Length: 353
Length: 237
Image (cartoon, rainbow over all chains, first blue to last red; front, side, top):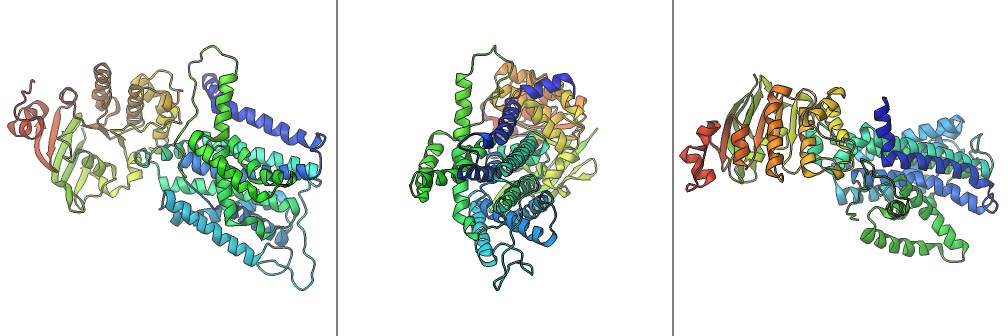
């Protein structure tokens, strides 16, 4: 890459914000557990799970923000990733990293299988189909349960045998270490996703979002590229499932209700569907907010009220979500610079739910 | 020298026939399709792009059966199209827009800068959202000439431009055949542009071809003036 191209690359706002995000993410992941008060216990475990759900939120955000696809089955796919992780681990006892990659592939395959018929639909129809899939997956995991070391395909123990817990990854045994482990995995996956958005698939997705006819006349196979997006976001969601499984070594079907997928979609809209910062905020709202409400002695179900109000606010005044508002605030507050030849503006679009 | 032939094309949407047994032939250079609103011009483009499937007829360019090529493969085959409503992707830079056209038509990426030089677009690293209407039209033209196009369809390329900008765009359009070696088909309501750009035109009215031939000759024929320009209007040539 020659110097002019490199300079132009670095001058792009999205590249700079990605690099800043990468730095902040890594520092947070590595330093946060050392801080007094956060260092151990509930707060750290909560933040760990928030970081994990940031991946699922990123999947929702990319599908909606980049392709205009409303997918309300992401929590179901987290369950698929978690189920595949436990199933593969108990069958093979491979290192966690290998299991995680395999689980991501399984989840991508499930996402694509759902997508094949559903992508012929659009808009509201796709949203409804994915919600039905989320419901179906909820029923399936409730019926089958998550593998816990037993025999057979479902891998459930029975008759008084003790359940087997999947151990945490070798590099993340304690809560501290596991938080750092999750933090690094999440940052790496988000950076890969960010990179993907800046190269050919990301460009192609942007063109599809701009308009189907225009995309086809450019020579884009729109169905294939939508499937690719589903595969990629499902794989990322599968990684979230794997990390969740590793967190406690065992999973409970009640964590994967279909309504959670709706909640996740709402938190992504509130956090911001057009940036990965929005996904991180989405993860915080999705899992952190109910915990916070519980901690201060309120019913965690109040989260539906809080997020409902937040959603109304986002839809009416902030289509790019909180991440978009933070970006606008930063552009207003930062010291004035000499005028640059180009100053990309953040996309702002109508958000319809 | 390329030759595009549409033979007996009929398109039916329910009970409506936007194109009814239309045959047209275009030979190299810049050619026009004109006609009043609803005449079937854009439908003809949609047939060539693969968005509308004719119930009868065939399209042939230098021996290739265009209708046998799926819509998204036609860019690779050598088809380029700009739309009445320009389709520049707002969230990508101007250069990335042209790069997309190159990537998905199987053209070398080195061609991207050549195409941008051809339209003389300044600062191609700006986002589509930041470009003026004229600059977006330039990006459209650049996307149309990238690689080795064989057939370029321009649907009202000068819509929304002022006369000076139209003039510059006209210069670019008329040079496409020699620069890129493609046959250019133009649909426009701006008769000055059509007259200046197109050597030959075909005239559609209510889904039928009512005239075809050298532009000046066709525009002055009474039948065309009646159907399209209004019988009373003087056509200065």
